[in-house]
Image 1 (spheres, rainbow, N blue to C red):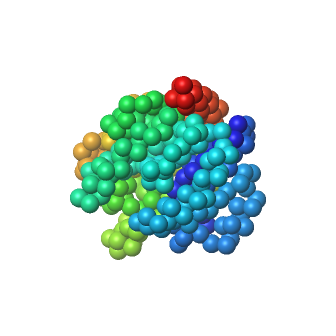
Image 2 (tube, rainbow, N blue to C red; image 1 turned 60 degrees about the vertical axis):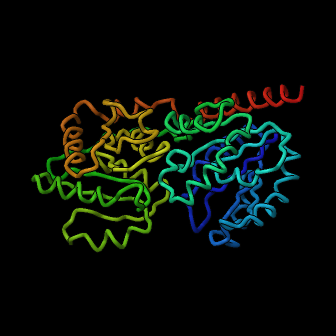
Image 3 (cartoon, rainbow, N blue to C red; image 1 turned 135 degrees about the vertical axis):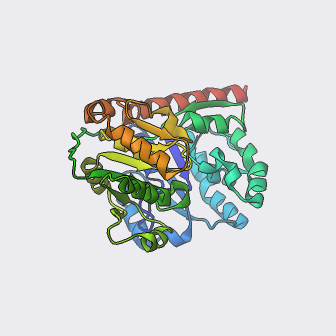
Length: 367
């Protein structure tokens, strides 16, 4: 089967973790299908080195430069997309922003769209102009034959905008062998893996660590990831704060940090799924997270706690509760809670079902 993947998010040298889940999905599809990928990319994120790296990809990658808020750019992008779509058996688009390229275009191929965008989950986070734009463009979610979402939370939001076929297909989380955690009385070791952005609320994580230490609980936090809040956080930290801003790391580095930690902390304001939390659980580390979003699909008392109040005290209480259950929350028991749910084999099986469904729907429309 010839599958054309179209996405606004895909790794570049300037943004190496952007759309890494799309890359994993596409690599998975290419193991059994003939795949091409089109990345509608901000020109500021693209370099000649990216194009050189694409030449070594297991499947063809087309980088189409597209600036935000450039309607003419969508027309230029369509000139690239049209012949590729016509030669494909199935179209697989990712994330709502890419649907703008399809506005007013007739699609004759079976079409599956996978939704990951937090804007669909929480359009109230936009300003007034953004809410109006989303309200005007949200009917585009009705266009694909099948729409998948990475969690039940996001799927419910998708269903606010369409009545057609929908299903859950989570992102791939590569399996690992959980490493037993090293627990000592010297220090409670916390780790966070996320960008330093408002939605992940790293400032609340720092305040939580300060609350733990105020209670006389020796603790440290290593935050893996980078972002615009780095300077603000660094200015607020004392020399002995116990917080280390590690910066971005390759997958092997992230895995090592998870193995070295005891608890994964992320006081997020909302998630569509949160791959980093699933990866932490796969490594056998219990998680303490914000309660809003797709993480409700997989976080239970057997692998962590969800926290509703957005206060350092509430998060500190949850961390203490998890730490008091280390004898029950072993690496093996924690990892077992997500076993087989996010494996490449399971995700591929679900995508195959979505393609079959889309093909049947498309055939029915032609009759």
